[in-house]
Image (cartoon, rainbow, N blue to C red; front, side, top):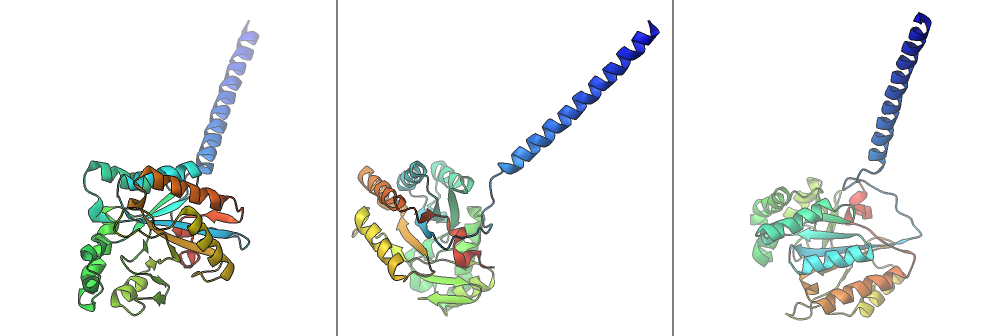
Length: 276
């Protein structure tokens, strides 16, 4: 009887040890799985394929519902990445705040970036870029970064196509004190290669989907973009408020996706932005 009791007790100890080992292994596997599926952080460099053609969809002035919402829906349905350069004073009310939160939280598909708080002191660009207003304009960008909780130091200048990275500044405002200061602070300033423009004063895209695709293919072929094998496309959320124009955006992306060389990326993976 005593012998059987000892054997039973030993078996219970071994069973308990096995259960602990299994629990530890399961926890380790779960932790490993969580690491494997963790969302990447904005701004982490990736390797770009020289055989691919990288397309950066960069949409300005969000939040501008319903345009912003429509663009997000199209990009989701088409499974492409896009960057939204957002403006702080457009974030009025809980709905618009939720839109900004969703853009920030939906990385890596969407990237939230900085387009100034006031959109260049309410489109008064001569004042905004005046040397006398350098500190005020700088604080405008810093306020926008703080208020919108923008996760990357990437800026598009309102009303201005200038590029800046690591002391290399090109474009309309190459010698402007504000741009020089932002560059020295480590901000990457991104312009654009092609604009999908606005039709006069209407909230409508100027070009058709087919016309835009033709322009993009021509620019890839002649190598005239800011960086090789890349195209940065600028447009505005408000142009796609109506269903017919949202459908045009979807058609535009569908045509581009037919060329297997084309890859859609967020602007934190643009060559000069990744260059530290």
